[in-house]
Image (cartoon, helix red, strand yellow):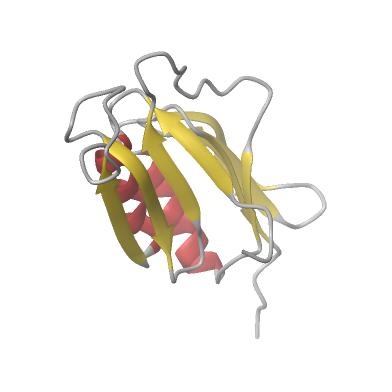
Length: 136
């Protein structure tokens, strides 16, 4: 790992969340269960370690163990600023909003860039934005 990567503990939804993010961003999803890791602090089929990799977004995730706490986003946003072409960024915003909640619509700002905020169906808060599109 050469950069900061989030490791999120979900409340039993890690497999679904990683699959969802894989469908949105592309890349490869891998999951390993508690049983595979010989863990007995949660359901055998729970995700002990999972990852989304080989795409524009990398995430690590697991299901919270019996004594662990799942993610709660307060005072935190995952920033996707300028990470893809504007059309792709708009597509990501719409996909993240599906089943979630738009906090601030994706829109052109006074300085010319576009951005918006959405909380997805798994409770993660995203800031999606890009610079003004070139006109010819």
